[in-house]
Image 1 (cartoon, rainbow, N blue to C red):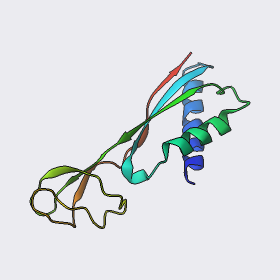
Image 2 (cartoon, one colour):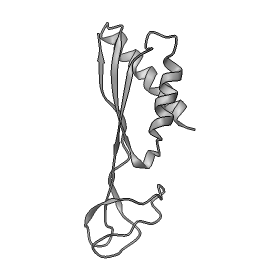
Image 3 (cartoon, rainbow, N blue to C red):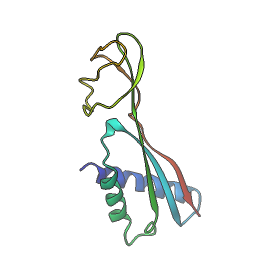
Image 4 (cartoon, helix red, strand yellow):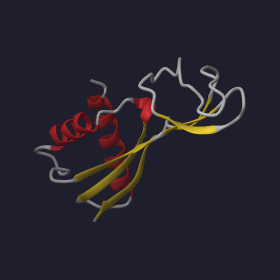
Length: 119
């Protein structure tokens, strides 16, 4: 479960930003995670909750937005949203030409904090 290490990294970044801006109470943090990262939303929420219990961040809300996997076909250049479960991208069929390999990732790799609400 890599969500625990992702949650710890998020908390480290949040604390650093809160210190820089002299705020002490975290209300909400919104995270964008691309499908390739294979983040399980419930596992990340549980890890975040667990790591913030008994700390100054306890009670903060974590919002997670999953960014779809958009690919550009390596053969015809068509952009498409892939529903493949193959996060290694070994196989994703282009809906236009049927090409299955060599696509370029447009979106879906993201993993970042979009915003922090704190005071």
